[in-house]
Amino acid sequence: MSAIPTVTLNDGAWFPELGLGTYGLRGEEGIAAMVGAIGSGYRLLDTAVNYENEREVGEAVRRSDVDRGTLLVASKIPGRHHGRQEAVDSVKGSLDRLGLDRIDLQLIHWPNPSVGKYVDTWRGLIEARELGLVRSIGVSNFTEDQLTELIEETGVVPAVNQVELHPYFPQAKLRAFHATHGIRTESWSPLAKRSELLTEQILTELATVHDVTPTQVVLRWHTQLGSTPIPKSADADRQRENADVFGFTLTHDQLAAISALERGRLWDGDPNTHEEM
Image 1: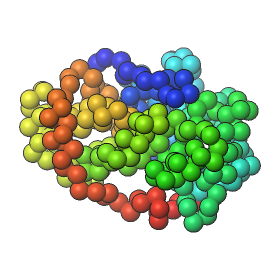
Image 2: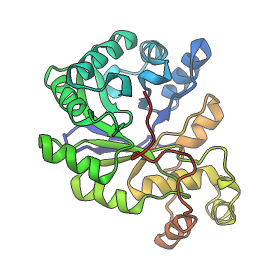
Image 3: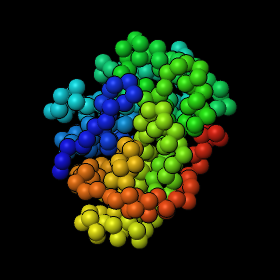
Image 4: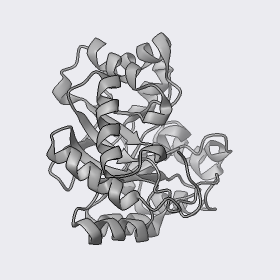
C-alpha cells in the first residue's frame, strides 16, 4: 500500500487526501483501532466534541509510534458552544480532553442558522488560531451562502468544509464553489452507509475492471474529485483496504458514471434546517 498523499490547504498547512472517521470509536477497543489505523498509514483522525471520544483520540496519538508532527487531529465545536468566547473556550476544552498542545484542524460542526451565531463562532476560531491553540480552521455542513457570509464578514476563508458527500449526493455545485475559493472539500459518510450504494452495477463493474473492491472505487472517486473522504472502520483489514486506493485511476467517463448515481441527500441534513447542539 502506498502512502496517503497530501494536499496544501489555503493557509499553507498540509492535509491528507484520505482520513479516518472516529465516530463510535470509544474505550480501549477504540484506542486500539485508531493506533492500528495510524500504523497502517492514516495521518488524519477526525473527531468532535459530540463524538465523546476526544480522550481516546489523544491517547491513540500518544500510543502510536508515529511522530506527532506527521499526524493531524481534527475536532469540531458543537452548537451549544456557539459564540466568540464560547468557541475559544470550546477549543480549550477539547485540548484538555485530547491531552495535546494543539488541534491541527478545528471546525464548526453545524451552522445552526436559527441560533444566528455562526459568524461570531467563526471569529472565535480565528482568535483561537491567533492564540496558537489550533493550526487550521474550517467548518462543517456549511452552504455556499453561509460560507460567503463568513468570508464577507471576517475576510477569512475556511480551509475546509466537511459535508455529506457520496455518489448519491456528489454536491457538484458546492464543490465548484469550494474550488473557486480555495476551500478543501471533506466528505462525511463517503460510502453512503446504510444504503445500497456498494451494490450498484456501475461500482461492481468498475471494481472488476480495476481489480479492486466497490468500496475502493467509491473512495478513489472522492479523491479524484478533490475531496478528502473520512471512512470509519474499527477493522484493521477494512482500514487497510479503505486507504489503499491510490494505485489505480478512474477515467473521466468512469467518474461521470459514478456521479450519475445522484439522487440527493440520504439523511435529514440540510444545513438550512437541520441543527445539532
